[in-house]
Image (cartoon, rainbow, N blue to C red; front, top):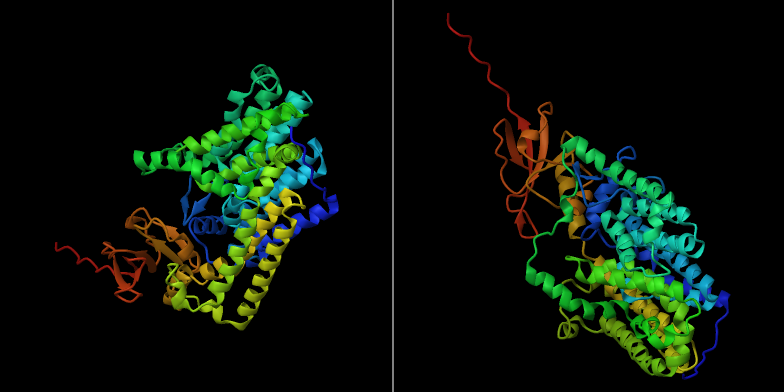
Length: 549
């Protein structure tokens, strides 16, 4: 076995490095700049309409089956109680749960090996390109990952390590119930599926007879019933329709399966350079905690199978795999570096090239003429944000910092710990994102402009509710209108007791009981769809003549 050692960083210095890298990667002061995008609009509307007395999530007055209450509830608290903007609330909650999970990962690895294992595990969890891209989005995935990993670790702690299976089933199921209120049945699947592959001494087949198991099942069933009962009482339907396949072809599924082995290592960069170490058979024979490592490997392989084979998966769901994998890399880091450190360090030269490339990219994008850039990249938006003097100063500082990091990587590649080099590389990518990608994307305000158009059209008009017909989306757009929105299944649902109603639709309302006038320009369109904002005034009914006798 090759012997290679690297110098250790003190615990306090490692923690400071983690905090500094976390700030550089996620840059929380930028979270509220960009308008709501993709499903963030749905979560924003759900948070606005959240009712603490009703576990059912609604958006525009319609019950939503595939959105669960915990995430909108927390975002609602951040907005209504703490006064945070909705965009910031959603993304800050996601980043906050990234930090909370990183803390759990740190202590799980540190308690098993050493504080250095904890530093490595936490650095990997916050430092992948996946985390840089998806960790700042206002989705509940990082919250799902927090509850799932907490349930998995405490299940091992109480059950396999302390042999207190009653506590294992109850505590694990309680955390799983919280995960259900955040991510639904998918979180239960990720918890239960690995159990089919547990082998001695991890096997749980004989542990189902423990009294804690029915208690845990009852807790989980109660959570499902609390969530599902309102759907049944209001619509007499079981709220499981969203579990089926959406409109996709067999070829789409085959393409996803074939591309996944390529996509996963790219998402895990730069930590993919050492993520394979815990699965080296030569290292497994030297593992001082083989049971815990086998448990984590089983969780990783099971999550990998689900990510690979379940249809219509999202890249952000890799967070469900990233927690166990990060702990596994942390506790096997020292052994792996001792054996493969020299070979790994040869690959770290790519981190140096990558960072200097980022510095050149920042300089070129921020200072080169726009017509030159159009020869190399396709621009959907303008680069006018570069014209501000303060931005140019910030860009110069960013270039200087990136070049300094390049010099650090060049001279420290053979002396500093490998995990520090990898984390520095991701921090450099975070700086590039904050300087270039974020302002470029944040200048797009199509949804805010649409909401402003609707709000101005409604200014001075009587009535307060905006009804939505034959339109399935526009959650983010109508959120910016500030109006209360209700989705109609048919125009017959329009309230009869209101003299004036407002309806946003793609076609003329076929409802002759009201006189309709369009408040928007006749040729107004949004994303290549014609839209109209109709004002419907109730027609006066003509008095019927008295019958002749």
